[in-house]
Structure formats: structure tokens, C-alpha cells
Image 1 (cartoon, rainbow, N blue to C red):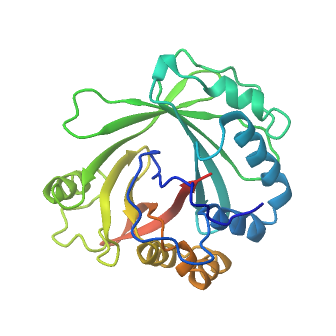
Image 2 (image 1 turned 135 degrees about the vertical axis):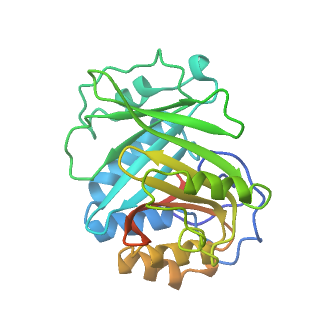
Length: 280
């Protein structure tokens, strides 16, 4: 697949919201999807995942899907996110995905398209196994900040998976601190948040998620150097980090979204899962 940047390519973050590019594309500029394909190659699943991506683009179009590379320290997986903020009036939903990918990703789930979700996601390890869960994201009325709720649908019922909250990284720094420290996973309130809010990562938005077993933190709209720093801190596979480093200038016209789930070991938060996002 051709990953060369085109002048008509949109600049969209992991909510499919547009942003102003940090700089003009350099000669030989690449799309974010080049990193996705590098992860496929490293995991040895390029042929299978290429077919899935083609099916997704056939059903939803180009630049309409967010991908996520997930790394838990031992294995890679991939999640795809599909937005339609029209909710019940959506033009494409879970039924569209299941119909588009039935040959690439077996699934016996019924599509709960009656739920007023604005986004859904599916995760796969690329090994060809059946899809047994779809995650649905709905609004969270009453929150003073942009917020949402995630439920997992397994064909039998809905399971609450997480709440997440968006904060302006500059204007709402106090709220970010309050949200991070109001956690059942902390033994006490830390005075220093630099183990969470890495100074090397300059993000426009900070997202805090409260999950079933641990909490998560996301840096939204950081530059290529901030993204590379996160990949290092999260110990992503070396071929992926090396690929980003070699092509740093080719990726510098994008902003990136990257997150991590953490658990406390002693007095330090330790990453247990990292995620890098881009546009398909």
C-alpha cells in the first residue's frame, strides 16, 4: 500500500477532529499509516491485516477510521475506531462493519445499532480468530468537561468498561491533577505528577480514563518528538521505534495521539499497556 502523503490528505486527530498541521510536509512525507504497516510487518500479520484494512476502507471510506496500535509489553494488537456523531441518524454503524469485514474477521454478534453511540471500536490480534466483542462509546451528560462512557457488547449484554474525560492541557491543568489523583489505584496523593505528565511531551489535550482494573492517561495532539518519546517510555518494539526515528522528518507534519494504562508498583506508576493512534 502507498503511504506517501498527498496534499489533499486531511489533518485529523483520534476523535476525527481537524487540527492545523505543525509544519508543512517535508519532501518524502509519509502518512501515519506507514507506522501501522510497520507494526503489521513486525508482528508477521501484513497479509491478513491488509485484507482487513481494505475491507474497512471499502465500507467506510478513506480517512474515516482511526487505528490504534496496542502494546502490552509482550504482544501487539490493533483496534479500529469508527465515528458518526449523528448517533441514531448515523449513516454507517456496527452492521456496516460486520457486513464489510465478514470474510476477514468472523463474527456472530448482532449489531446493537439501537444504542445512541457516537463511536464504536473493535480489537484484533491479527491471528484470524473471531470477533467476540464490540466496544460502544456514548456521551456523559452532566460532566463539566467533554466526557464519554464505554460499554463492551458481547452479544449477551453490555459491560461497563471505562469513563474518560478531556482536558485542555494548559487551561485546565488543575483539573487534570484533580482527576488523576482522585483514584482508587493510588495509595496516597502524589505531590509530583511528572511520572504521569511527562515533561518531554507537549500535548494540546490530556485525557484521563477510569477503567475497570486500572486508570489510563492520553496525550492528544503531540508532535513527532513527543510521540517518539512516548514510544520509548512505553518500550514499544524496537523495529517500530527505529522506523519512526529513521523517518522523523517524514512524519513531522502530523500531530499524534498516544496513551498508556498504568498500575502502581511501590510509589511509581508503571506502564502496563501503550497505544499509538492514527488515521486510516
